[in-house]
Length: 248
Image (tube, rainbow, N blue to C red):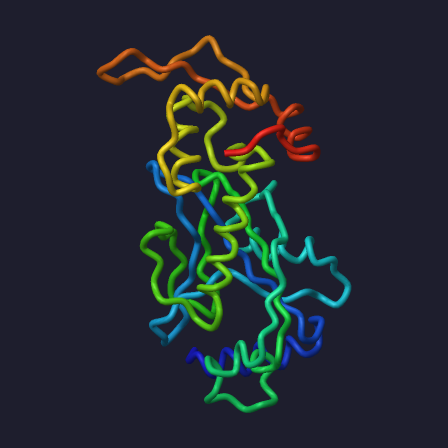
């Protein structure tokens, strides 16, 4: 089915079931192969890519809408979601839908609530919907051209995530259950965009008191097998709620 027909049919339904002028855009981060990745979709019959997003049902909370949209796109549950900004510039969507009639739902002015999400890469099963030709993970350093203001939304999400490292823990939703200290340090370095001193990182993470050292080590390397850790879930959740006592 051609893109214009899909949009027209989707528009007729959207006017009936969704809150007008309110949308969601989600920046979904995953960590794989020592690389921080973001989830993007390629729009049908177009070279532009987009962040996952959607609309809020008339009888739905905004956070519930974000969870619904991301579960449909990734199949993942228990996603860490954080509202970080509202985007409401004039004509955000008119350029992309300029060939459509002004009555089309998607061409209206939308105030978009931005969320960033942290997911376990291994638990995600990507779904391509009717509006897109592809749904893929891209390295944050190799993001293709994005539609509308989605590049700005991504940039603001990454800045917010970096700031969060100064007062909240991170990693529970991005790393496997068991991980090494170098793997955790690599995650922090990629998000922050800078190298961290190994000894200082180790000491600071132990002071946070959110890690449990396991009686296991990572096998298979040429050097001494590094110890494995996992997060103390209760202390991690308390740190999310109350914040940490020092930043990076």
